[in-house]
Length: 144
Ligand code: DQA
Image (cartoon, rainbow, N blue to C red; front, side, top):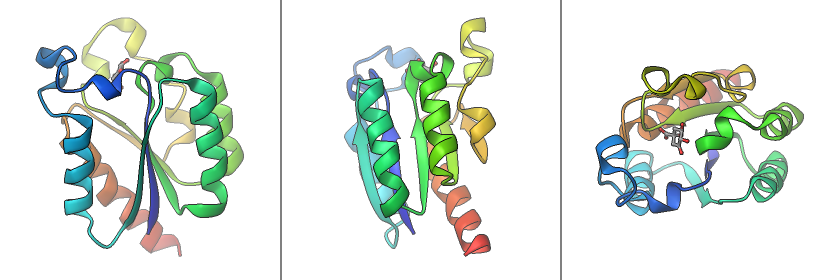
């Protein structure tokens, strides 16, 4: 399975950013966990603080990936453009969050990603990513 794991704004600061919410694991640690968890997967791991760059990355994935794991950060709650990009490329997508967005502020309860995702995994810290890899791998295996 070829998978793009795409991380949005402020996730480059993991490790030092609000550790009481997001833990002390860095984004590099999460990348290493994903690679160790799915050694047979061909993983492209990206992060951007820019919505347009994320959209370009999703567009490029259409020709090169079997699926997407997306933590869109705060763009989850604001970005119709990311929703449209995912709808356009028609790749299976698993939405992930480190924190349980539904147990936090009301403005985090709505996701523009959820309607165009296979499903959402939220609240398990770094493990949300490995759970997403398992879910995407099962889906891709069942549909190809
Ligand atoms: C997040 C949750 C979002 O609400 C927040 O804006 C983030 C991180 C998470 O992984 O828990 O940047 O996506």
